[in-house]
Amino acid sequence: MMSSKFVEYFQDEVSKWQKKLGKVDQVVNLWLEVQRTWIHLESIFTGSEDIRRQLPADSARFDATDQEFKVMLCDIHKIPNMVNACNRPHLVESLERVKFQLTKCEKALAQYLESKRCIYPRFYFISSADLLDILSNSDNPEAVSRHLTKLYDSIAKINFQSDGDSLRRKIAKGMLAKDGEYVEFPEDCDCNGQVEKWLNNMTDVMRKTGRHYISEAVLTYDEKPREQWIFDYPAQSALCGTQIWWTTEVDLAFARLEEGYENALKDYNKKQITQLNILISLLLGDLSGGDRQKIMTICTIDVHARDVICKLINSRVESSTAFQWQSQLRHRWDKAQADCFANICDAEFRYDYEYLGNTPRLVTTPLTDRCYITLSQVFFPSLIIGNVIL
Figure (cartoon, rainbow, N blue to C red):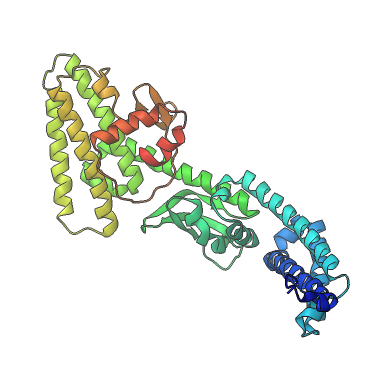
């Protein structure tokens, strides 16, 4: 209307409406922005006692701002006319003040969440909303358990000690994987206190558990037939133990070869084929879903191990220092340190013991072997340890 050539007669009236409607647009946009921030913070500062304890000054600031905004809501509800409601004196200034106070509360909350993420870095993997939900349930580990799949690769649930004592219900006894495998902790995990601290404690117990079972699996490998030994340990421990003993037995075969026994590698290859056939026979029998998956994974690794030995035989490799053997991904157990290491070429990585559950394994191809070599030469070993070699 202002652009019309006939506006001069209505100039004052049109200018007043332009000012009023401009104020309406300003107030509505500002109100929506304030309302979104208020809705986000209201459930946090009023529903989380932990945050109120940790941020007393900002909680008091939010309480005052919350009261002011609620008064504004009641006042505007009494005026049904949109133009009149948005053109009340000092409304924009009041909204700007509320917005400023809410922004300060939001920044303080962000700093608080960052401090929690620094203590427990896996919190960086989840959204702020999930983190706030975890913090609000700090005293209830069972409620926190529903977020474990976002924090760990395979842990889906924690088994807590169950009795009438609420303190004892915060003692974790074992972990359940996404695929259903259950692994008992060799030692209890205390889940009392601040959530970021007991989650760090649980991570340590998880790794100690992996190290404990792998250590036992390696030490008991020769005590019974392998097809029976497999069922005594979790899938990850059985798989890692198999890979450790494969490296050990190949090195022993090379030692016999250097001593003059020319068929050492060929004899070991026959042993591999026998072991593989036994596992195939087990797969044809009646097995639970978890046991079947475990044996299928070990079969996949055994096939690759068999192929590697066949290539060594065909290439007439006679020494364990030959590149054809050194370029393979080899697990070994260090008795002095009671720890597992992965070697490939001149690279060595300490096994990280991140729990991976009873998951399937892709077939290892020549390209996979090349990827192992390439990845092992870069400066980021956690990628190898965490996701590739296990």
